Length: 202
Image (cartoon, rainbow, N blue to C red; front, top):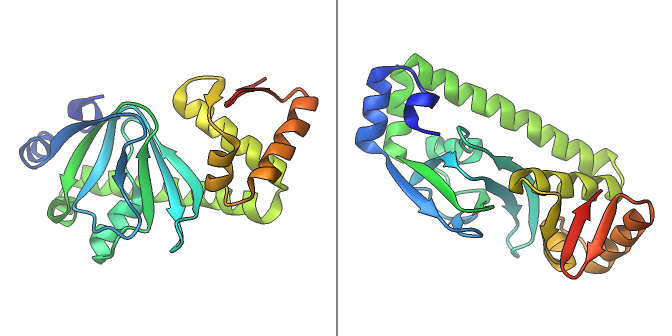
């Protein structure tokens, strides 16, 4: 995806090209950490970003993915409020980002298309966070785990994940033993196929 396919306003496109930079990140690269000052807001051009919430002890909970054309509502909010990042962003695969300097975020609200883009971003991310809250509050752990696996597979465009039970437990903020037990039960129900550090969705 390029800037011209994302926006139509020529003046906005000129500003994006003038002030923003494009950068390629390798798989599993951390774009920004929780607690860091955000100096640039990313828009995904290619690849996928995984957004996770971290607590003070480094425990993580998966929130959502960002796909081409999307940006991070959390990063936008932190920039506008002058706060440090509340989330961690990780490249799910090789990912190219358009990095927008913080100072431009508010200035570009003079462009109607930018204003609409930011508002739509907030709306979409808010709905996704509600889904995460519903899963945590109202669903059993097996449904949360299946949702997590489905989202990770979708982001990687695959049906098989090369991932350890401990990595899943870390991002779901639970114990490895609980994840292993649930995965074995899911395998018995023919929902997944387990291998050595691999999980294949049926």
